[in-house]
Picture (tube, rainbow, N blue to C red):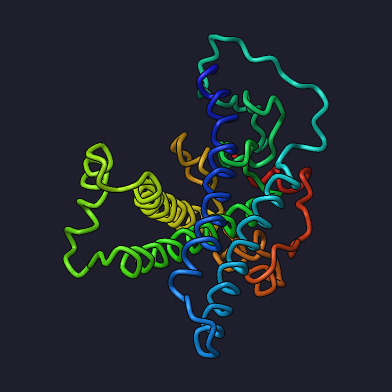
Amino acid sequence: MLKLRLLNAVAPAYFFAATTATFILHFCFFIPTIFPNPDTSLRSSSALHTTVFLFLMFNALGNYIMTIKYPAESDNEIAIPVCSPRCSDKVDSHYLLNGRHFCKLCRKVIFRRDHHCFFTGNCIGNKNMRYFIMFCIYTSCVCMYSLVLGVAFLTVEYSISFENPLTFLTLLPLSTAYFFMGTISGLQVFLVLMLYVWLGIGLVCAGFCCQQVLLVARGQTWCQMQRGELVDNRSPWRANLKDVFGARWILGLILPVQTVEMYSEDTDGLKQD
C-alpha cells in the first residue's frame, strides 16, 4: 500500500510537469521556429495552430478538473469500513456489495467504482466517468498534436529527416550518446525525450478511452470485469452511453461541462453486482 500511496502522490505531479513542459515547448520553441516570419499567411497559420492547441489543452485540463471536482464517493454511506492488512480482496479496494467498494487509497466508499486513477488521485465511478473518458480523449489529442509539432520543429531547426521510419526509433539512444559526447545540448535531448513521452501518453490514453467506452456500452465496470462477473444488463448500448454522457453529449464533446444528472444511488445500486 505504501508504494500505491506514493504513486498516488507522484502521478499528478508528473502530469502537471509534463503539461507545463508542453506549454513551454509549444509557445517558446515550436511556434516561433516553425512560423518565424511575421507575414500575413504565416501569422494566420500560427494563430490557427495556437488556437487548436489551446482548445485541446483547455478541454484536457477542464475534464481533468471535473474528474476531481465530482468524485465517485457514495453520498449515502456514513460508516467507513476498516480493512484488515490481511484483507483477501484486491490490493486497492474492498468489495461491499450493492455496487459499492471501499477504496483503500481514497479511504472512502465508492459507488459503482470502475478503478482508481493515480493521475487524478481519486476513484472513477458513476459521477465522473464521462469526464475521465473525455480527459483521456483530449489528452491523447494534445500529445499526438505536440508530437507532430515536435517532429516539425526538429526538421526545421536541426534538419533531421524522418522519411526513414528507423529515424524515430533510434532518435533517443543516438541523442543520448551525442549528449554525453558533448555534440548536442541538453535541450535537444529533453525535446527528443518529450517526443517519446507524448507518444507513450497518447497511446495509453487512447487505449484507456476505447476500453472505457466499451465497458460503458456493455453496462459494466472494470472492477466487475476483473472479478469475472457477467452483468445482466438488459439496457441497449445506446441507453448505457446516454446514462454516462447525457442527452447533451455533443456539448460535452467540445466543452468540459456537466451534461448528465447524477445517479440515484438507491435505485442504481440494485443494477450493479
